[in-house]
Amino acid sequence: MGSNVPDKMSYLDFADPLYLHPSDTNNLSIINLKLPGTENYSIWASSVKLALLVKNKTGFIDGNCVKFTANPILAKQWERCNCVVLSWILNSIIDELYIGQIFLKIASEVWTELKEAYNKVDGSVIFNLHRQINYACQNGSSISDYYHKLNCMWRQYAKLIDLPKCTCAAATDLLNFNRRIKLKKFLMGLDDVYQPLRAQILSKESLSTVKNAFALISNEESHRALNPLGKTQATAFATRGLCY
Image 1 (cartoon, rainbow, N blue to C red):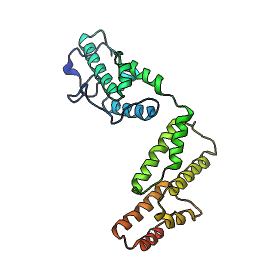
Image 2 (image 1 turned 60 degrees about the vertical axis):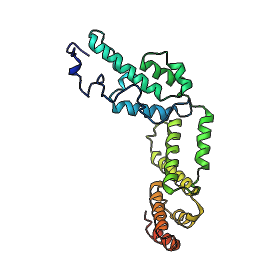
Image 3 (image 1 turned 180 degrees about the horizontal axis):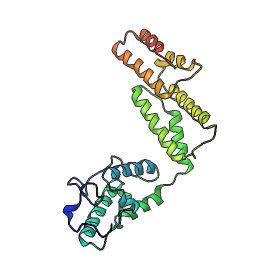
Image 4 (image 1 turned 90 degrees about the horizontal axis):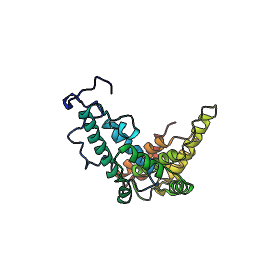
């Protein structure tokens, strides 16, 4: 902030990181999950940063919003905002972690402490997630629930392993390979009632994508719900609708 910084709170608008909306209270829970440790740090951190971005408060965790000591009014407002952001972070961690962080007074320091302590991915975390993906199955749930469960785990896995970006000629081949692996995993976990449709998809020379397969099988699921006595006809109808 330069010499033209306002000295009255009335000058602050919603675009200023020091602005606090009446709903921005210290008891607010800005995300719906808690940080227990290393298990879900990447998901937790991404969720918190997204929530703070919406509220224009990311500067309080990355250090970009500094306290303007030359202006006592804005300095006091910075302290208020810092305490609010700090409370939001503490509200999103479990009690055991809360006790260890409550004595730190700066939001960016708490954010850094949590990152250094829990942004660690060992082999067991990746192994367990990989096993969950491999053993995931529909098991009577809806196609939508099964698909979204797999999708969440795939995204989390990609975030954990953090592979470097490939820009060589093989990038497209690698992308297609990963798509085929995901498609087969999705089909493998389907309930047996979808076996005819699964076989039809796999018999195609040019395999579909997971999204296309999900849409097709969701369509079949809807037909089954509307016409439970006509499952054979519904399967045939859905299969004829398959295109690549």
